Image 1 (spheres, rainbow, N blue to C red):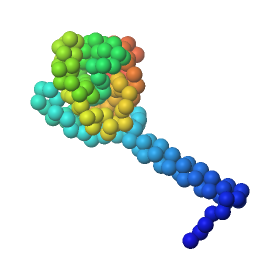
Image 2: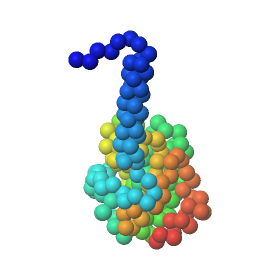
Image 3: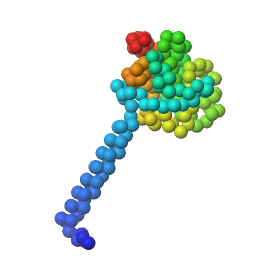
Image 4: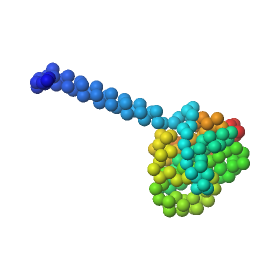
Length: 177
């Protein structure tokens, strides 16, 4: 059994070991989080989620099309702000090879249904109250959107609300069609 006697040498050794353990633990946590965050250039994670219209949505179900995956919530002010432009965008590009899929992390079905009605959302939507799919993407801030090319690769990640009718964004999407 090793006994530490209270002296300067043992205290420094103990503090050094504790500091090393803390640094190693912090590095392991950061590294594990980094693996779970999807970035532009990454292959989109495989997920399966039943949309409100009854279809099972997977990234591969839309191969050959641009897939816009938008994580949102009814209680999120930037989500509320961006929704009208996303509705307009989805309507404009629906028949041009672009699929918009909105995934809400709302726990309340009633709030979710009211939001869909209020904004006249006609693009694909689903509720993921346990945020299982958003966890796969490493999404913890809403809204967050992933633009996925026809080959299933994330080509752009948008953190925060955006204006989906912005001409630069529309040109970017049209460049993938």
